[in-house]
Length: 380
Image 1 (cartoon, rainbow, N blue to C red):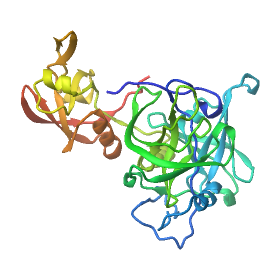
Image 2: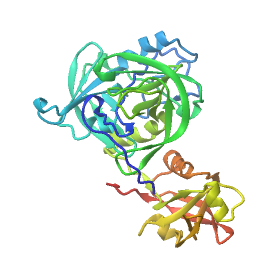
Image 3: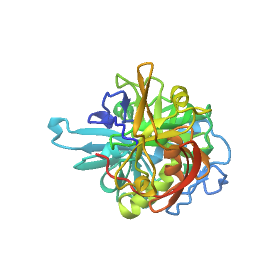
Image 4: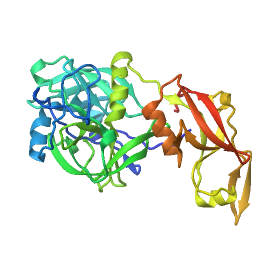
């Protein structure tokens, strides 16, 4: 069970300097011409919107012009304004019913949320649903329909490292700002303030700063492939490393947030460490792959399935190494090289109540263990 934790606080974009800033924002494409051809890069908005991504790549100018109407400014009041209890973030229109997507940390503990559209008109927003485990929130406005320009979701699973992307948002409160860059890496694990890490995160070098939080990351066909949510920094300013929650996660989480106000994540209930070369030598493994189970949480799915954690350690050259626990080699036939592989599979393919088959190495022999996934505890 991953329990790392870095998170956010107040100020513009709700960012705090703790190595990773959860507070960013970007812009996405607006509604699309109905003549546009839909391709395999498109994930339909789950509530039946007809917005599509474009069939060919656009210029950055075209992406900005088509996306800007669907991006909003999100002002948050958490206390008395005189006490500085507010912040500025971003969001984008999800559907014609007035649902807007932003970050959970942007609207966390908000007493009032105000959404401002491109033409300057503002509306009070209602809180619809929040998922702190993926840093996604859905708010809703009762605005003039002419202001609602839903942005199409692209398919983040088709992203490639080196692919060009764009971000539009309100960095440092500067509305309607656009930056561009490339996808720097995929499948990152991002610590959150909810006690668990967010898996499958997109890394980008597009400039993202406090105030960008909640805005969309857009591919060159005009599809939203992520929600900008964090930057790697020790100063609070962009240093070339930004992160976005992938659209695959958005497509899975948001419809449930709209319907039920919350999303229940599946959970195994283990803690441990990845197999590195030194640990592989101690355990007499031929390859440094897999995840060693050290702790099995009481009453967790893992305990009920009979997983075994490490019960002792061996000291080598003054370093203690845990031994005796199960080593997870694969989940549902997917190879596990490190904990990220397990968490990404849970996020993409599993729900509470599903079964998951773990291939484990125990006492030198491989065997399969079937786990029935339960709801993840709060982790606070």
